[in-house]
Image (tube, rainbow, N blue to C red; front, side, top):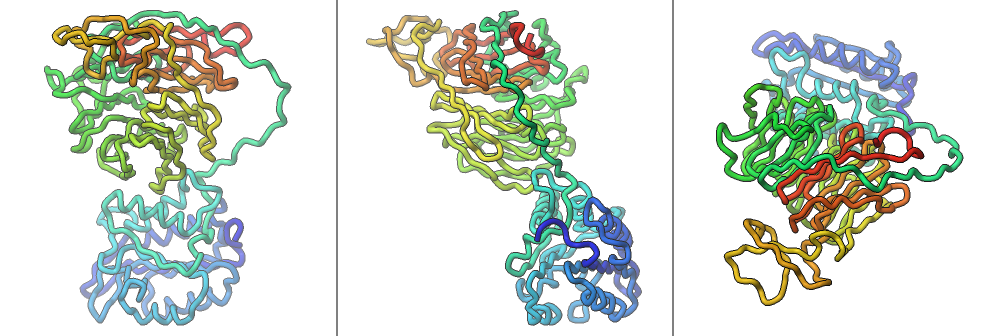
Length: 577
């Protein structure tokens, strides 16, 4: 079936009972269900049923008042017939308290005679959704406008599903509603389908936007030439390993994870906020920071939990998220979600409530995480060298790409059409989001002429080795520096630890354990510049562009943050200054 059902040839019967006599309680939300569903299904941009084709049966007094409208609609419908029921049911002459899963009949083992009759009819293309499993009650929460299942069904139809195409199939609607109810720890719906009925289209997807029309190619122009000498503005020394650096959305501050604290700095270098465990440093290193789009909230990752701070408060006090540690964080573009990543895979949290909405399992430790600009996708790289792209609405992996060694860094381009990964195989790779095509690979090659290329740090308490070797992670404290033999190599050198796209999408920045941050032209793949002002052999740990693209920041385990001004020559468009 192409497009939505023909409204003129389709029929809908909406049945609900709100009021009861005897021992069964009233369900006021059912009346609201019927009215809202009728309005949604008749909306021209959802299904567009004519009002006369959508029959509402409220509070039927006997079975005939329910069955007759269904029989009549079935005789008239030559395309799609949709039947909805909400209310109490009776099972073996006892109130079943809305065990709606019984409607699925022998597929779930109840042997319900009505469903068996439908099974005998063997109608192709039937699709049944029950609001809960056969042994669980459907939910009508007192004070809520709609019953639990119907509330999420309405929300899905009214708002659509991001990441889906222009139409919503029965299966896509079911998956969305089931995922939301599961995340809210409410009864999960069940379904029964015949053959490929789940692929049938029910409604238009309000969340879908048409891609821009293809335009004829413009007259080719020479690629922009960027100034190869960014201007070094200042060094911000913080006295501890700096793991992460990010700009705040207003571009006026930098947030950093620095040793056992997180800090927010003015670009002048003045510290404005220091986030600690009361008056003490945290017991372990702050492993990552992320700033929400509102610029007010900041998240910090710790071994045992994640904290969210209001950095506009005079004395910020955090809200705790979860009871397991995280190594990497990302806010969604609208700030409503926070992704935490680490040894337990990826978890999606509601920022305000602090509740976990979804878990995205990985078989290995996750080392980097990023939301797409429209918030519909999430990218994560792991210890096994793979990067997955997840559809957040459905919780399914839609794309997988790989390096030959662990993937530590990941980022989307500003328009979301590309994403970049940085790996311990010394490469950064750019991929298309839609297909996973690898369109560019850049490599941090060993260069013996680079500053510090032949240096290593040694603990003065240890004897000098017979031959020079490179220090491993953690051998930096109080070390003496000695020269390695020319041509010596390092198992640390070249691993790509950070990636970022410039706001105009023209440049890719990479940071590496070779102590450099490099800028690459995405049009030509050529390297534009190496930023060399970091000295520790464990290299550059973070790179970030300011929101306007005029500034560039790098962080390192040499205990500094470097701030640069980026300039473009006169042949480029404004944007990089």
